[in-house]
Length: 275
Figure (cartoon, rainbow, N blue to C red):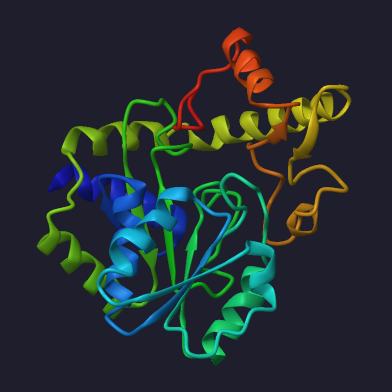
């Protein structure tokens, strides 16, 4: 399909790897996990990661005989990988923004004979390069910053092992999880401005995070770009900067819902990264 080819070519430049496009981030995640696992296998996933990935583990993988072990993101650096076929990480995690050392995890996974899959949605390959750090596969929801206009669902898997990527491509064909040509066009359009949008998004997040930190009603602020944040250690190393996502808590659910309802600058949407 020519439009798939065009957007995959763009993503291949960013990832410096073969790319297979999917109609959503979860379709890409599912393809990677299903391709690398079979009945009797064990997979480690982050307990504080994207909720739908955890639901996939419980609702699909376990049903088909895969043992799914959930471990907090920070604890994965010291977790025992023996007996696991796949280690699946998110760094920074969504929504907690916890990080792990990708290179260290990759080395330990390789010595244990496990495949390392990294969800790089929150960073994009412009801000973090898991394949360069030893990950076997990258999965991402291009619905977010790459598409950038909150009008398309999309995802991709990237990898440098030709045999593994051939299996991913064959899974797409057999399962029918193919992206629509119009959505591919929309992501192609969005990628053309990703670099300038991402730069502004990250700069804005740094300013907003500092202002939130100074506000008396804000608690539990998380922004990896702030010195003192538990994830700050990754910035300047595996992460170019602190990214564009901020997490914080208010006094309770009622206060949080009231803030979201009143603030004219906030859109309540899952497609973070929209203009």
